[in-house]
Image (cartoon, rainbow, N blue to C red; front, top):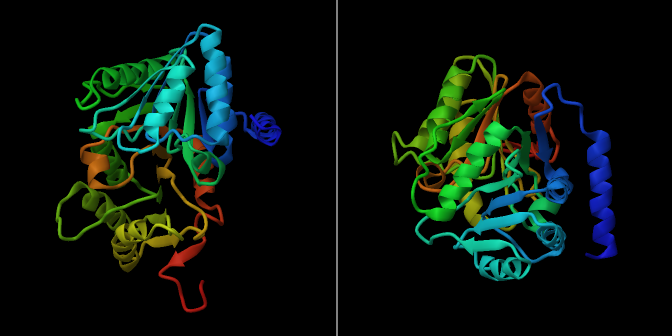
Length: 344
């Protein structure tokens, strides 16, 4: 690891320790944006028995070199480390080769189904999940939303999820949702009914931060359309509803995907915001009253109907207040949509 990166990681860890609030429920901690790298290194460095991870993308860059150094050290002290990477990302095969050389049990998933999850389970006791990929860009530049869960009940569920995908990542894991404290697990096909119920049942406010929303009026009744239309319906019954989405300065396809949802919601009176164009808002966060959904799923057909996705619902006013404040970041809701001629 370069001296510059080492200093950044140490500084990040110190800031994380010094600036993180003392949460009433210490088992649940938000991990956003630049918090992620020091948080995952802290977990890896503290592991004593096992580290398991699922990742869509594992790059070869300075941030990932720091993670690989920590994983190699964990292996040397007797920790079992295994990870499943998505087959469809071109640089993941080389990453598997590097990980194997470090003593990590690593392989690609099946081409039949995307593993879009971003999940880490440590010692069967701690979980880190959300939207952050293991790439320098994701950890060093993007808007990303994650949570750390210090709860062996939740960790057991997600460890069994990893084991199911390790055995057959094309099959749907038969794992009912688990609730512990303020947190409920939602994986794969459990996502849509849980989120729709939250939106339909909200009484005061809804906030959504989403990298991608593929709304298409041609597919009346589709699950994505139902979620988007639930936001408009909530505004119609008097709730405070606002949505922030990515506006890319390089990904024209994403902008085309997101445009119909922005147009539909804005026409329905929902407050819609574009992020700062040079910032990638890759986060996936839903706030409905005092419940928050954090995880890997975008609002698209494949995410809701086909992919391997890991998320949680957290019912906690303090965590909800944190993510409500996160929504108000100036780089996240930089410009109202549609923009007025003066850009405001």
